Image (cartoon, rainbow, N blue to C red; front, top):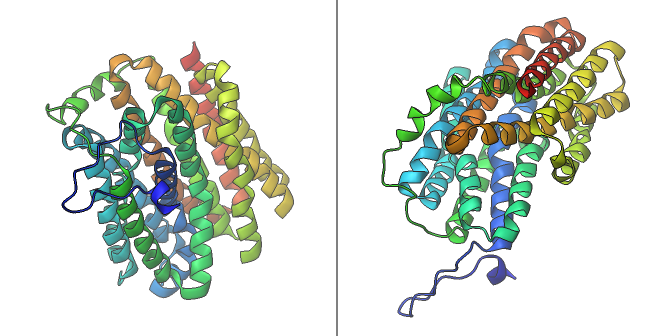
Length: 399
């Protein structure tokens, strides 16, 4: 079974094995999904740890939210770096080196002596982790067998979405047994293991271009000035920003109740997340901008109902499912629409979208930190208004 998933290399002294034409499906699926869960899970995994960190460092909640924002900012910036670099130096070297470096930067967070040091290390952790996402999608498009590409892409996208729940659940479970520092130690070991697996599974290849990585950046001003893309880019920060803000608010306000109820709420969104890869193909007949408008409206209504009804654990779980479903359907709809309108600059346009998406995710904890003192309802109303604005912008983009 092991040799089926992870084919062995040629023995010393033997003739080199012929390079397969396409990436091995099963091994690529397993390693890429595992890496996606770990990578983006680092953004959300710190949320359950904020209380323990605050008690150890005697820091207020408003300062602790920078532990999430710092990673998100580094993560977003890294997307703009590693995509162009992989064109010049190859996909496998960039991903393997970046994930191996992330094992080190994650371990360093566990050794932080104070909040300031931890925030700086979280920025560095975010930068190194960003080597995976943009390059992985390009690798799948280039090296996967055509009939396997949709499955691989859907699985990796689903893992990115599921990481929001996985990261929080894993962190909460490990911290309950061994403390918050052990969370980063365990994640560091996991990154080292997946880096080794990625090096073994990914196919080597030549650089896609011999040109300068700066070529991709020269196209960005034109994309940001494109009147057909401006409303879509303006709506983008709200998507993950509202998601991270709401889950951070649940932890900071204590509205969920005890730790057991909070654990239940974090897991409650899994059904919606797991359904998204199956629902998205069915909705492909609906234009991307229209899907984004409808999905953001669903999240806006769900957030408004959370603020209006003050639901119990069960009601909150149901509304969170609807909220997360809207967020999960919005992101691929925006990717499709932006990529389709960008023409030859599709890759750069999507990289720019991903950068803006995670800038929004980085701002989310700050919104929660500023509003949580007024209760979950106030936070939910503000997020509903922002999502409604985002839906209006995508509606404008349709026209």
